[in-house]
Image (cartoon, rainbow, N blue to C red; front, top):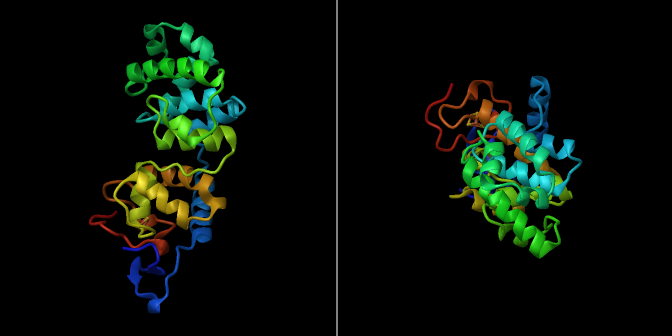
Length: 241
Ligand code: SF4
């Protein structure tokens, strides 16, 4: 399905739209998700919390983002604070042994690999970038263990640059709702870069991640209490609550 099809308000069904191509009502979608989040009193995602606590220090944001992959928010926060207390910059990370770094990263998922990557990254940053985390996408993507999601998050949170961080929740919801049709998170990111107004780029990730964890769940989403139902085509959704 193309991104231009129209969602029939309130029904979740797609209509032909009389030949017109209409983009999703992004303003309405973001406003509804923000109101939902405010009502729940939800906190910011862990990486955003770390970015604020460490005053957008790029090293802290990078370390925390790496630790956050496949890891619960509370564990990301705990391990980020533990590791950054001992390794507040690349040089101090490199001074840790591999075992020490792994112990500080525990119990984040894949903590040994993440700790090893953080040390390798520290070494590259010192040798190649004078100790400062690079601020462009291509350079970030060359670092071990850094994919587009991590690189986007570092650019957004540490450098206030434009980026769209697409994880499994953003990818799933964007396809289910019919806002776009894509096979991979990378493809979703590229399409969103074309169809989503820039002013919503930063907001879309934390809103959809939280929504995906609580309402638009992978299996059997809670459509009966969905605040963006009128913007959703329900593509591929078979069982709902
Ligand atoms: S919860 Fe249901 S209605 Fe809401 S976005 Fe997800 S699939 Fe669509």
